[in-house]
Length: 204
Image (tube, rainbow, N blue to C red; front, side, top):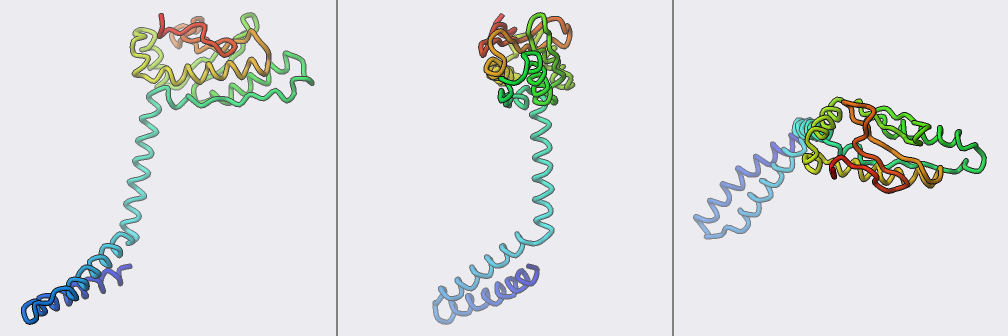
């Protein structure tokens, strides 16, 4: 590509002289202008495709992606993906085995958010956040629920509500999913049961 840039520069110089000479002697500018324009296009194309230019773009793109990931980690939106909870073994396994299978799937699905435990007495899958940014955000939310919308809280609660519907399909009615308060693990900030919200600190 460097060869193309050099040739383009030479043709640009020659084209400039040709254009000036044609205009002065014959008042003709079209041919010279075409040569100049094509030379500029060749130079621009060659410069854009130089290895250094590509490297810079690649580095910039990587930095942009990294910055974007950091920004997302400070809200709840990065945990809004739904789970896929299957029930293919529903007719073969006992209810306890099915419950443990769902628990394992939820632990895998919410691994970036925190740990997931199952409370047999209340039939509740309890999500305890461990991600530092999320823990700090949840603590702030517990103190001031009015920040919920700004933090992206609805993205997370919508996901959990949807997943509770998946749990109902896999295990039957009566099972809940809760996000526990990092400051007090005995209290929930949000709970959904059978695909419906039963408690949301943002609405209190």
